[in-house]
Image (cartoon, rainbow, N blue to C red; front, side):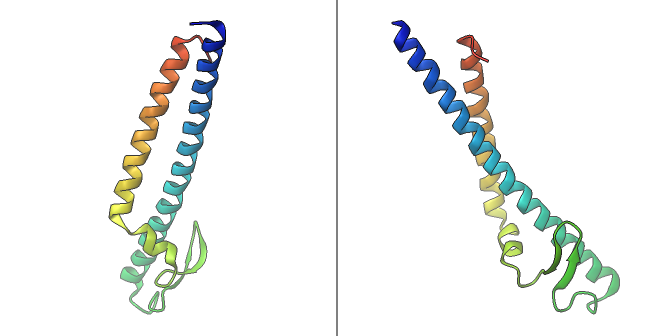
Length: 113
């Protein structure tokens, strides 16, 4: 393998690592948004159970991590409660973390940081 081919291989590897890191960051951010809304829904539901339906009958609530929101009519809550999508996100996170780990191993084997 020529020096140019080695340089090209290293450059492509670094590009792959960068893309995997960006994908991981995006998936983690998506997971955080889902988590915040799931926790917010649980907070609202807990208030309803403790205080009775007058607490949240309309769905209006102040959720500590979100602010004032209507839990029953905010689309993000519905999206966050989709179990199949949460499992899909978990699978995507697992795959991209494995890919990133493999790419970083390749980097180390080529003497890259």
